[in-house]
Image 1: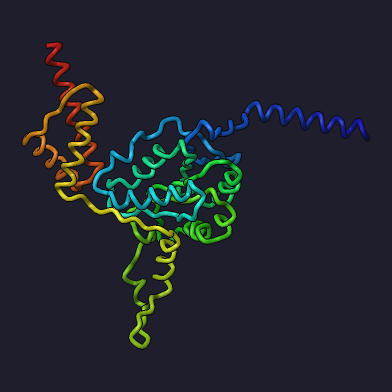
Image 2: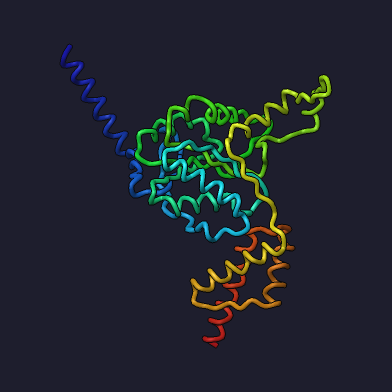
Length: 299
C-alpha cells in the first residue's frame, strides 16, 4: 500500500514538474523597482505585469486644468500621508488631460511611495483579489480605470459600486481608485428612465432607474470635471508642446501667424480643441520641420 502511495506521489510530482516547465510561474513584481503595473488575467489566474514603458508627462506639462490639478494632487498627498482621502472620478471632454493627470501624479510622487495598477473595466470583478494582494505592501496604490463606462446591459458596474462603498476598501488603507470617463454618470441615460419620476407635494422623486445610474458616480468621493478648451487655451498648449519637442531635438520653433493658422486648421479638422489635439499638432509640425531641415542639409 505504501509503495502504491509513493508511486502515485512520485507520478504527481513528475506531472507537476512537466506542467511548470510548460507554464513558468509568473515573475512577481518588485514594487520597490516598479512604479506601475497592469493587472492581467489568463487561464491560470490573475497577476501583476510590470509596465516597461511609462508616460513621462509631468504635471507642469498640463495647462488650463489648474483647479482639477490642485484638487487631485491634494487628495493624493493626503493619501500618501496616511490621512483620509477619496476615490476620484475624472470625467468630461476627451483629450483634456484626465489620464495624463494621473500619470503626472505618478511621476511626481513615485519617490514618495505612490504606485499605479491599471485595471481594465472587464476585469473589475477581480478587485477583491487585487486589494488583498496589495494590502500588506509598504506602498500606496492607485487602481487606475481609464475610459470607464458601462452599457445598459453590463452588470459589471455592480462590482465597482460594491467595492467603492463596501468592505473591500474599508479593510485596506493603501488602495484608492482613480477612474476617467467621458460620462459623468458612467451609465447611458435614456428619456424612458424619467418616465417613472413623480412629484410628491412639489418634490421631485427620481425613478429607480435614474437613481441606480446616478448612485455609481456618487460613490466616488471626489468629482473632477473637464471641459473643451477655448481657442486661447488651445494655442497656449500648442506653444508649450512646440517648445518641448523643439528642445528635445535641438531646434528652435518660432511662433508666427503661419504656425498659428496651421494649428487652428488642425483642430478644426479634428473637430475638437484639446490638449491632446495640441500635442498631436506639435508633433506633426516639429517632425515636418526636422524632415525639411534634414533634406535641406543633405540636398
